[in-house]
Length: 433
Image (tube, rainbow, N blue to C red; front, side, top):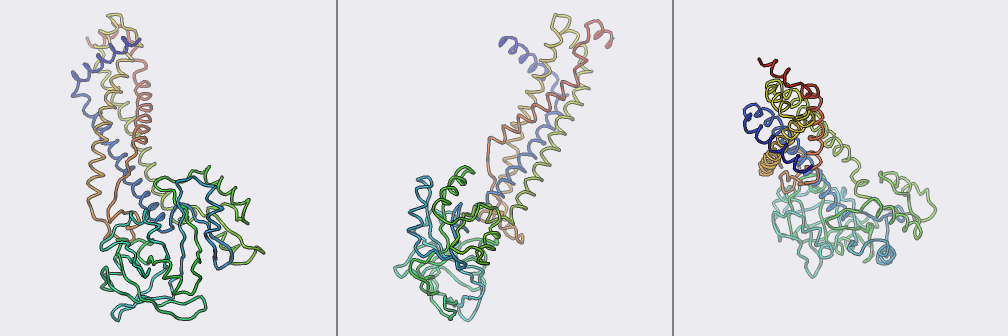
């Protein structure tokens, strides 16, 4: 069987080389179709990955444990972490965070005032893995003995004329609703003009606790970071089940606003907690992500159909031109199934060659796009990494695409040649006489 397949494959290669002029259009259709599909997949996946990465940095990891009262108070986070740690894998890291609504607070620098949307109290040393993913225009996340450092977005720093190492004054409200001020050292300026970063400043958690009058252990978010991987659905469900045995837990939800409603309306007579996934945190952005995926899928379906139908219909013309060749094959004793296999091998080799060249072309397109600085486009920064569209390479998707194109195109070709391959040698020669 292998020797026969080898024989048909050799005939197919020889036929392609001899009739290469006829196959150029088929090769071009496959090449450009695959290139456009893969380029769109590479770029779209890169955009989605950028959104997820920014969200992961913003929310401190993949999962957040929060709740308590309507003040989101977790007064002894160490005790909570001790209970949660046995429920997750050993490689999961825990971060204590303090999110502070900054809409009524302001930065002052050399007579200028600017507001922020949120201050995130973080332990820069504990979260060094997350902050290593930041792109800094100046400085970094160095920590001073006084723990009075912060990092700020480049657009805001530019408005204030700030540079790394400068001292800035922060005015905010304490837990008792009094006004307080604190001087902070800008240790780093990060590049982010998206909704996740532009109006967000990261402040040493000890300084933020002191300035707002909260206790030295106060935390309102316990973040779980799974590193480069993401928690599986099974892991999340298992963790939720384990937490429900130890705490008064809100059910797992994809809409954190539902949990906030319960917490703020004091529906529960005792403290209630919730496990919030990254998808729940970026629920509003999920529609954008789904729209991107739908557009990519639509492009894929259209182009795969064009490749399959285009090659199938073109093959009808090619086969009719090669009717004498088919007659010779039949005259020397080749069965109709053998003739069919020759054409199928031809189709597969053409697809494979076009696919490989299409992959190379798609990578070149994606590489070219990645060199463009697109941060000047308003509101587009959320899809960018360091101001650029960085493609996400997933070879598994390439193989899946090859399989889909191969199956649909081969079926189309089979339908086209189903009658011609059964022609007798006499009729074949009579047709071309």
